[in-house]
Structure formats: C-alpha cells, structure tokens
Length: 239
Image 1 (cartoon, rainbow, N blue to C red):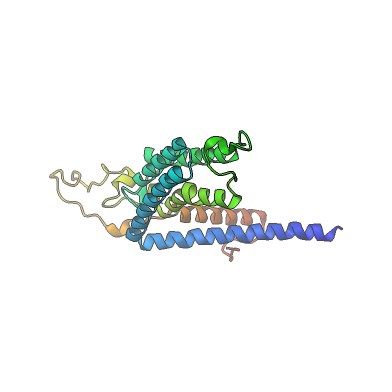
Image 2 (cartoon, one colour; image 1 turned 90 degrees about the horizontal axis):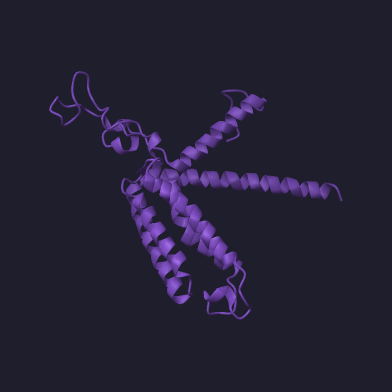
C-alpha cells in the first residue's frame, strides 16, 4: 500500500494543525474572559490553590503518597499564590515569578520520576508508597498531573498579564519599574510638594501572557508567509 499510509500522515498533520488552532483559540478566549472579570478570576485561582493543597494532603494521608514530594508541591502552590499579590500584573523579572516557573519544571520531573520508577518487588510495589497491589493506571496518573501539577500554573499563565505590556500610568510602577519617571515639566514627582501631576488611567493597556503568545505566533506566521510569498502584505491571512 502506498496511498493509504500517505493519507494517514496527511490526516495526522491536519489533526495536529486543528488541535493547535483550537488550543490557541481557547487560550485567547480565556484570556479575554480574565481581562473582563479580573476580580472573579483572582478569587477562583485562590480557591483553586487551596483546593489542590487539600487534595495533596489527602493523597499523602490516604493513598500514601511520598511526604517529601507532597511538601514540595504544597510549598510550590504557596509560591504560586504569591503571584496574585498584584493580580493580574506580573513582572517577568520578579523572583517569585521566576521561582514559580522553576518549580513547575521541578514538580513535573520529580513526580514523573516517581510514577515511572519500577517497583522493587511484585509484593512491594512503588517501594511502599502504596498499600495496594495494583499500580496506578494511566488515567489516574494523567489526572493527577493535570489537576495537581499543571492546572494552577496553566491558569496563572492564562490569567496573568506581563508587565512589559503595561504603559506607564497611575499604579503601574510595579509593572513598568518607572516609579521615578512620573514627573511633569518643571515639577517634582507626585507627593514631593513640587505640584500635582495628572495621570490618565485610560492609558493603561494590559495584555495577558497567553494572548501575547498567540499574537506573537500569529504575527510570526504572517511575516513568514509574506516572505515565502504565500500571501501579500495587507491581504487576509489564514488566521
């Protein structure tokens, strides 16, 4: 057979393309919702972090998960919660944000190594971490990773807005680092006695990191297509 395998490869490529576009569209839509309902999004994220911490404790107590990894996961979620201090704005250079990114990778690697470790003996599966004879199924492991390891970091990625996308305005000193630049001509900073300076809150523009990533990929695809001659500048692009 020659045609059917080629047709199978084509179907896989189209399926991967459609799945990628669906994920990008979902991220864009969720980011739009968070921008419109920031207070509700922060409340949901806070409750979500507390719920996952409780689940981690229950897994350690009832299913005999390793306490060291459980403690690491709990500490990681407490650090994730620190990103909500100035929600939805976050500085990409903030040590808390950088530590959160590192903890996501560390948790994934340690838990993956834990679940992929071969049992010591058929009678002592998972080296005593479980009191049952059966190994966790793929569905159970995938559900644990999706809820207890990836859910909060993914929700933060969709919800937070990078400080680099915030224009200088009232209250944006944390995001832009321009706290000393709010000065009017011939006057000192606000609150220094040199006069008052008006700030336009309407000048603030925030853009979620997920939306920024989708827009960046879309712009890159559009420019690449123009260079390759797939379409001309100013014409309608594929997406």
